[in-house]
Picture 1: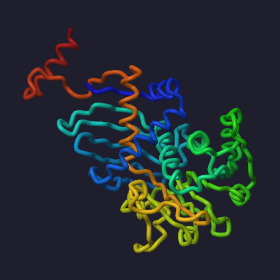
Picture 2: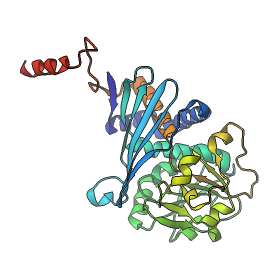
Picture 3: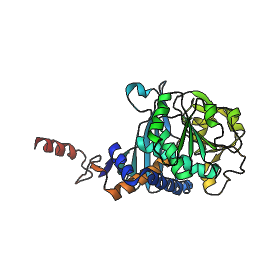
Picture 4: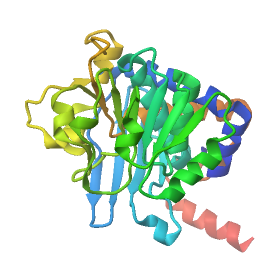
Length: 345
């Protein structure tokens, strides 16, 4: 029997565990899986692009578990009352192929993206970082803000979005957060001035230039989240040229990340090597670092494992007859007769 977790189930899970504690546990799961990098069967995600957006499948497996995520990115979806990003995923048993968990991943993707940002920033940002600029105040912004506040000690957020209503929404959600100062800015340049960390999480599917070299200060860490498909960037190539650049899975990031602007021999480091001590993270207090984040299937694998474990502990989720429960596994056709009999009865 497959367990299904709805959006309401995941919301209840967050309420009962608490978002800061859940994010901490998620970082721990992510670190554990990234340290097993060589054990995973990895591939870049499979994407179907259109003029309005992209639909992607993100598979990955180790020797025991297989997972995939279905996810879209449609920046104009607000016109239809739909989120820009919608997702669901499956966690299955490799030995049998049986799906153990079917879960919403729209809320969960925002949480795992924020947790991944913090996990990487722990190794790339200066330890004394206390001010973060948040460029793009849409659906993922609260998750990024709270993750950096609770897990990395950010005390001031400098906010900018081309849509003032998005910034007002973010302020409304965060203004009662103890120990967090919110500063609304009139431009990207104003927001990043004096920031230790700059997080860009914009939605438009375009080759945008959100950050330019003249905005970058020594010692900054740039958490580039929004450039996540071909034809979609946020950073001027000059920012990358003068920084230490870290990515998730290089074959995918060179296609989808801000690195798509750079030549094939442009030097980058996969994050698992930093975590495992095979490559340095930040090398000096004045070094500029960039996390070219596009989202990778391993992060959804970790998130699905956490959802499975915590939902089992809390008794959340419901059984779903997704796969036939057969008396004779070789008699699939007999299931049609059984279904008919149940309907008649």
